[in-house]
Length: 460
Image 1 (cartoon, one colour):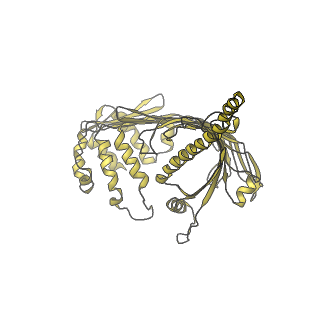
Image 2 (cartoon, helix red, strand yellow):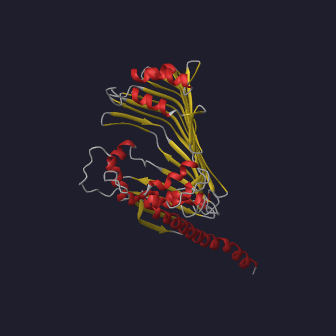
Image 3 (cartoon, rainbow, N blue to C red):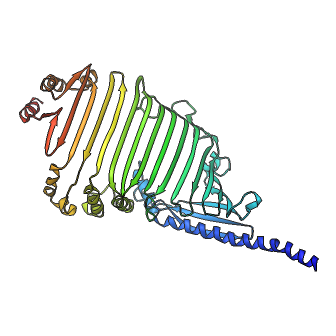
C-alpha cells in the first residue's frame, strides 16, 4: 500500500508537468495571436500567413509578412528614375520562431516560455553579406504576466559587393514590452559602419551609434502616439566623395533627445539636438544646437489628428485638393482652441565669424476659431485670430557674417536700420527682436514705421 501511494505521489508531477506545459503553450500561442492582431492597423506590413506546429514542451511557428502596396508605392514615388507603370512585385519575408513552453522552458528559466526567432530573407545579396547567417535574430523570455524581454541581434559584416567594401559591427538591442504592447523599454546600438569604394573615390564611416527609450502608449486604441523619452547619440560621422557638390564632411558628437509628456489631458512635446562640431571642407562650425517645444496640445485631438494623418493617401504628384485634408480640420480646430504654444527655444551655431543665435515663440491663447471648415473656404473668418495671437522672434549674428551675404543694395540699408533702433549693434553682433501681441507689431520694443519700411522697399 505504501509503495502504491509513493508511486502515485511521484506520478502526479510526471503527469502534471506535460499537461501544464501544453496549457502554457496554448497561452503563449494566444498571446502571440493577440499581438499579431495589432498589425491590422500597421501602415507598412501585413501578416500574410501564420503556420504553427504545437508540441507538448515546445512549438515552432513560421509567420510570413508582406510590405503593403501603399508603402511600396510610396517608396517608388520617392525613388529616382522609377517606372510609374511598372507593376510592383510583392515583397515578402518570413520569421521563424522556436518556442519552449513554461513553466520551466527548456529547464533554463521560469515563465510562460522562451523563444528563439530568426528573420529569413531569401535574397542573394543578403546571403552574400551575412555569409548565410540570419540578418536578424531574437532571444526572448515571456514571464507569467505576459511581459516579453528580448535581446535582438544582427551579426557583424565584412564583405565586398559591387566594388564597395562594407563592414559593420554587431547590432544589439535590449527590448522589453508588456503583453498588450503598450509599454516599451529599449537600449542598444551599433559600434561602427564603414563603407568604402575599392578605388577610394568615396567613403562613409560612422562610429558608436546608440539608442534608448521608455515609451508608453497614450491611448490603447492608437499605436502611433506614445509618451516618454527617447535618446539617440552618435560619436562621429565622416563622408568623402559622396557627390560632386558635397565637400568632405565630419560630424562629432551628435545628441538627439525627445520627450513627450501628458498631464490633465494635455501633451507637451520637447525635442532637441546638439552637435559638438561639424566640418564641411575646410570650414568648421561648433556648438550647434536646436531645441523645439510644442506645449499644451489637447491629447485626444492630437491622437485623432495623428490617426487621420496615418491613414491619409496623398499623391504628391497630383494637384492640390483641399478635400483630402478635410478629415484633419476638426482635430486641428480642437488643438488651436486649447491655447497651444509653439517655440524654438534655442537655435544657434558658432561659425568662424562668431556665434549665431535665434529663438521664436507663437501662442494662441483662448482662441475662438468658429468653424475651421468654413474658414478654409473664407479665410477672412480667421481675421479675428489676429487679436489673440502672441509671437516673437529674436536673432543675433556677427555683422561680418551678415555683410558677406548681403547684396550691395541691402548692405546700404543697414546703417538706417541701426540708427532707427530696429537693429542693435553690440560687440560686432547685430541683434533684433520682433514681437506681435494684441494686434500690434514692434521691433526692439518700437512701433514699426510704415514710411520707413516703404522707403526701404523703394530702395530695393
